[in-house]
Amino acid sequence: MTQPDLDAQFAFLAEADKLKSVMRANTLIDLSRHENSAEHSWHLALYAMVLAGQAAPGVDLGRVIQMLILHDLVEIDVGDVPLHSAGGQAHDSPEIQQAEAEAARRIFGLLPAAQGAAFLTLWQEFEANQTPDAVFAKSLDRTQPAIQNIASGGAGWRDYNVSFADLEQRAGRKIARGLPAVWDWLLPRVKAFFD
Image (cartoon, rainbow, N blue to C red; front, top):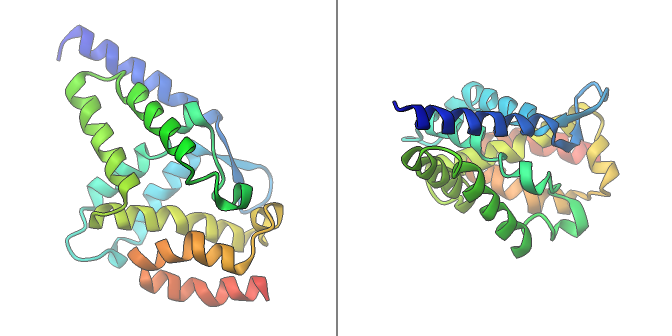
């Protein structure tokens, strides 16, 4: 390890600290405040550990946790774009995807080249949502906010006028793809909220 490599790694880690200041649309379960994106990433890593038994055969939990720790670092530049904002279109819009890709290149580019490229590849894999590891990770990323909303009485869903159909389309399909038993467990609880 060279001095320039350490300089780059600590510059990246200092930049990553900014994720603690990015506030999300979801509140904490106790409604005391909104969660920040770093808390969300930590919580997702814990979700992966706890729900590892629900993963498809061959899913590499270590890679999943790495994806979950890295996936929202782009919000340092782009901010949190809530899943249910602007009719659900803004979250997956080409403009947001482009801004996040640029943020990923900038942020991971702070690292030594090989390490930055590896992190960028993991982030891109998560975003593409095609590999078993990414599908499991993305399912967890959609599960955690749903659990937060159920436990908090639907605070975020009310704020964004979310309907059951919105939730099923934007979150339910991705949850069911990687965590079918979890979606089966969630579905009656979600329906109870919207009924």
